[in-house]
Length: 353
Image (tube, rainbow, N blue to C red; front, side, top):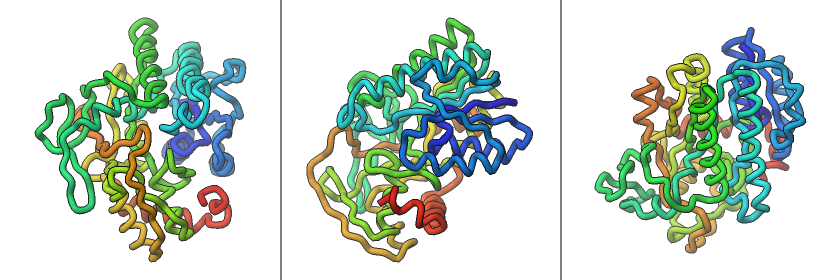
């Protein structure tokens, strides 16, 4: 099998590629990336060491894609992943990356009669509607409750039938638009494709920033004793997210690539779920325990644009349909990240601090 991974030098793409190559050494894996995100260049030696092909190209430029050799499956892990894209940066940039780039990838897959695995985002769900959900405040976290007026939400998290009407950020909108386009390719052109609405992905080799990759950022700031902040919701750090280790995501992608007929034309919410969720306050305690460091955390009461009090994935559909569930718990994830930071301290410090 020949697999093409766009965004292949990024966090998700490179780790998925490496996992495929290690599990299936005879597979031909090609990673394509424009290397724009700082730190993505650090993944090139990892790919080369495993004889994974690398193509320096940009999915926004259709000419870059014309000489890609034939492939059987395209895994689209490319994106401008910041939820603040279009707010703190030009709108055209996120649209070109996340929508027009997807169009070019779809055309390339169609040309090769290849299947298509799309990494979408939980950010397709509208912010104001999520914020309207009933919740309780516990000692260290906010949590949704089962008594809800809205459909598709419970204490277990968000299901795929949650209302999509409303604003969701430019990032979320471009990903939702891409989902709609993919469904047209499936129905009108016969493409085999699957859409995964991923929650917070994390693990080693993620170049975490405030607006994307916050779990790694939290670990890095503790590791190097740098300040952090609890922003919004009273400055308590009780905002809650479920988190998914990249290894668990690979296990699902592996199933989908090899059973595309089964998964074809489905949308799945994919995340750590309620059992693998953590608030910022709880994350601080875990990082202190692992690192032995106590850092200053500023408390800003006012909410920030496009932030969410809670997001937790309900994996019921993918667990029932695909016989998949995440296995790596929060503490294991954080230990993995801290070990990576320690082993690569010199090269990571300029990027992550």
